[in-house]
Image (cartoon, rainbow, N blue to C red; front, top):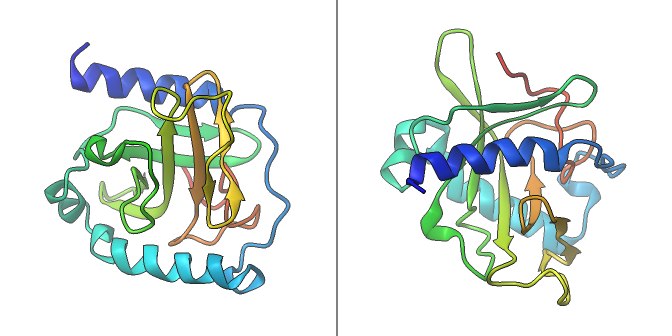
Length: 172
């Protein structure tokens, strides 16, 4: 499968995999979390500050264009998933998120809202002990064959810092 087709397939599957999952009931403020989460939040914000400009993310290996924006009519959106395939492996590096979550503004520019960390089952089997990110067990997506965790670092999320959907993010 060609790389751009693989990305489209992943995003299409991602839409279905996230549908029906419960939203986090945790607070949206990083200060409500452990020192480990607060430190990770600050580190990922520092690491992705330059990615507020999409061209900077493209220069670091994230795609310039993504075909589909993922949204849910009830819970909000995730946005466009810009995947850096070079970071997809068996470990999570807080400063190197595998996915950047953007939304497209009416003027055509992109706004960075958050990140998503993923580990495919091919390198961390689904029947093993779940991987953790900042002390939290990552979620399973059997449909996508991966573990994942969202982190809303640039757009506060009333559903929680680690929720799948963000009511403040829009597609369109």
